[in-house]
Image (cartoon, rainbow, N blue to C red):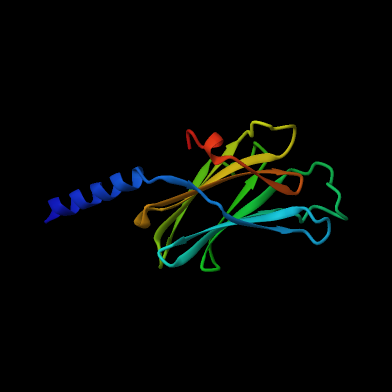
Length: 170
């Protein structure tokens, strides 16, 4: 009996390892009412009847009167939600001394089981001084789902960048 359990676990891991990464395309943006720049980008996927989303939000707390404060570092938070309920948060920052990027975190969810979010710092091909490029991978092994999105945060605005160009070694 233990032999069959081991085989089942190994098969499950093998299937998860070869899951296809899909770029998350069902995305929406929310603009700031102060300066009308995009400060929130949410991408969602429907998985076995439930909606899983990753929302990227800029940290606007240090901004005053719409102006970038001195010594400001572009930063924000990724929030994973399932049917609107937040299940995980992960900060990110353009400050390379922070360990907020190139990390992975997992949690258990009653609908999906294990849900993991991995963030990777990237340098966009058309990068210019400032900002931070990040790619995230949302994986739900039980349902063989892996979704990805890459975004570039410069000042307060999120800009989409190609996941295919930036996730080769993710």
